[in-house]
Length: 307
Length: 178
Image (cartoon, rainbow over all chains, first blue to last red; front, side, top):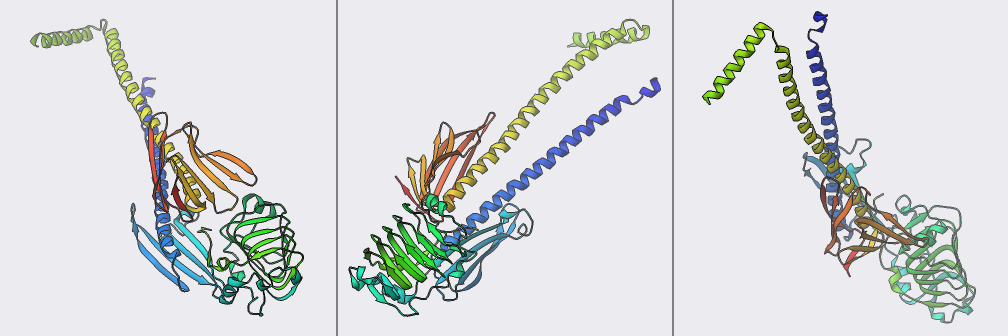
């Protein structure tokens, strides 16, 4: 009995030591994990600041097409290597510019589940054709064919345009860059996004009648667009239908808008439009008020967006 | 001093004599060991209490840090990227319109909590931007320049507090003081 009890105290002590060592090890793992997360948080913040600073500087400049490395260096803690790259890209007609500034933590960027190691900011900027800019100073309606011009009180606001003048810009450049989904309800509830909208859809998009839709935006739909009766767009807008028509029902109000359709723009009666309408064919269904505004064709920049 | 040392020697002699005679030694040993055990238990309890308090404080500090980071990330997402026109009211409220034309929002501090009120065509809704277990104190906003905003606040927990401050670059907005 006494022989079997020999060393029992030591066994207890060993077990206590083992438990304490295990707890210490768990604490060490936990603190290491916390430290790692903290470092990554700081790194992501540093990358965002770096990226935003370069973006703010470059966003207002006219950049040629190409890619550049804006910055390469190390940030503390951990002497992490970071690079900031800039990309400027133009559409085939040279009217739309896409700017992307991307900051990357070189050691973390390849690791999965580490989205913070790459920070990105983009911007779209659209310029308009010179011929159209000149037209916008004097005219509101411009098309190759027009019907119902007898409803136009100021005939001087209409000009017959050439094929070149009614040519649409290379809007497919927006694909994958601008927002690609919006529903009629979202347009009424949230308004149009300043990120611009490009719908590559064969379905007609309808703005519901009696709604006020705010938001400075370029709205493009491949198919036709219908603006319901009594709709009001108080902010600057450029609306394109690349393969369809644009129909304005009665009493639509556009405070600063460019409407450009591949086919026909139909305008109901009682509409109030400030801006420019371009199409192959324009149909006036009743009397409406029009006014020219050259500002609708000033360069149009989107907001800064990250994805 | 000499008296104490002589008494200690006497006690030791007594113990040695007791041990040699094996009379009453077990009781004395038990009393001594109990006294030692009580002393050790007191020391361990006091030490453990400190360790537990320290651990709780540390754990809360980590949780405060995480809660603060969560709040900062929401502020950054909304003010740096989604805000278009930003108005600061009395260094306490930030009202802004978003990149979505029909949507506007307001950050405000009420009853030691931070809230975001959003208004759009579908109605108005308010969401908390803090964790209910911690209170928000010293909430302050300051315009640095037309595109930079300084935001600071303090999170108060049960055992301690943590101060947070951040400089936000508003990429899409212009800041105004009301």
